[in-house]
Image 1 (cartoon, rainbow, N blue to C red):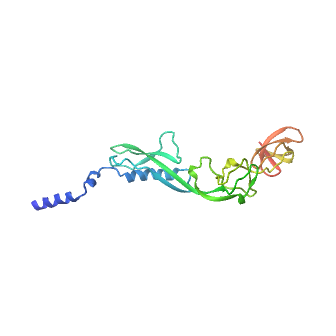
Image 2 (cartoon, one colour):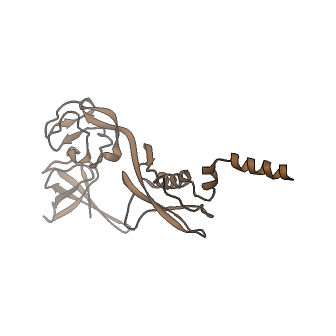
Image 3 (tube, rainbow, N blue to C red):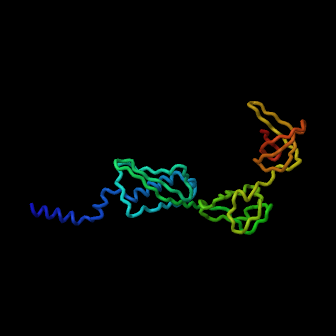
Length: 231
């Protein structure tokens, strides 16, 4: 019996002291994984190649092992951005919550100007190159394409700049003074009339027009090169 007790004591002594001390402590890896999964499912760059980095807990932190599934959440009024604070809580017998900083990097190919582009210049594929960038850090976003006819630069664009939507505009599809077909739809009734453009406008843009018959000025949306839908 004495020998059995001695062997048991020896076996307990061989167990790592830190393992015994941490037996009732929640895993930092489990907390980190909970925050990571929460952000991975909800961040706004779902179609991009992302890298999520979760800040480490203070190594001195000792939280009771949770008897339930950990829950991640955002602080009140917060939204998911490039840098976000995520809360993780336990609602078990020994409840607790902690906050972790999370950083997201989202990589995709964006348009970058090959050379300086002058204001008012038509921008085509010959003027840009596609380069992979972390788009989560682009505060003004990025333009995803030029369309079949290219775009016009609204202002001067320096060489190497990421092309953003506010740098470009679609070329005018309708010219000022051009005769148009104006259409208006109300319930099942569709009315068509002749009109005249009072300004240049691109497809999808709002435009002021004149009803030729009545002389009344109206506003509508350009839907083709000769048709405007009156609202």
